Image (cartoon, rainbow, N blue to C red):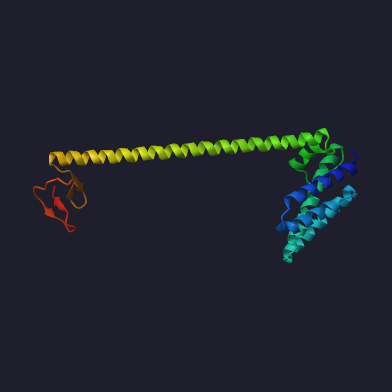
Length: 219
């Protein structure tokens, strides 16, 4: 594949992706800037693309300083010019030439697997790998979500069982107290007072009432 063919492939693929990613009306400036950044690179030599990349970054920085309402346009334009320079640098290195900008793993992957015309083997391999990775990630996320849901459901079930057991135990205690005409006491170590149980048939044989009107005994 000639360098010009590779460059056109990068540009055409990038324009298609930009139109897909920024399809909504609110992303109009991003879409326009991305498409402009790709189109400006057509039929350019590596040295020209490197110079345009530097100029595009300076223009985006200027837009920030001036609070330009079209900042998103200039920023996306600079990003796509940088992407073209990145992929082109990987192609140049593969062919024994010097890169024109910093290379990334993503650009290297595109050059290794996908720098072929559409509907050729490399194109299918790239798309198949992307779909396979996305599918594996989706399955992992769904599996983790199902595991967490099962753990939460099990914890809720155990909580309900514990609450039911406590209520049953309290009910049995009240029945025993009522049947034996006895009472249970709870001793407050701070105040030194004992509170009688709430059994309806409980009998208080001696004692006095505290400020809340509860019958209490001193230990």
